[in-house]
Length: 169
Ligand code: NI
Image 1 (cartoon, rainbow, N blue to C red):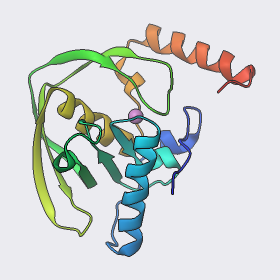
Image 2: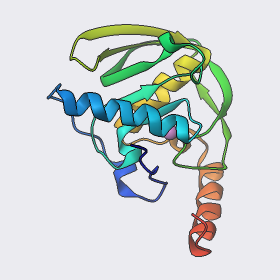
Image 3: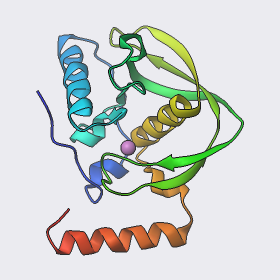
C-alpha cells in the first residue's frame, strides 16, 4: 500500500515520535509499505511521521533500488557517533520542490533495531550519513530546515505559506 506523504505544516512532523515496542507482522507490513511509498515518491529515505504515523521507524535506500543490500530499516534509531563535516544540498519529501545546502557530519554511526527487534550498528559516510541524520531528526520532530539560518528558513516558510494560500501545497 502506498501512503500519501504528509507535508510541512502538519504537526505530526514536528512532534517527537513514540518508541516502537511491538515487533510483529503489522510492523513488517508497515515497513514494506514504507519502502513502497518512499520509492513511489522518488525518495531515498522516509520516516513514519511522514506518512502520519508517529512512531520511531524509518527506511533508507540511498541507492534507490540499485542495491537490494542497501535497504535499511531503522527502528528506534539513535546516532551514537559523528565526525567530520560535509555540506550538500538536502531536500525532504515533506517539503517538495525545495532544496538547500545543509552542513552535516560526514561520517556517523547509528544504533537501531531491525524489524525483528535485533540491535545493530551501522556506519555511513556522505549521502548515507546525511540520510541517517535526516531520518533520525524526523523521529525527533526535527526537519532539515531547522539546520538553516533563520533568514533562509523564514524565507522558505513564507514561500510555503503562499503556496498553501494558493491551494498548491
Ligand atoms: Ni525528510
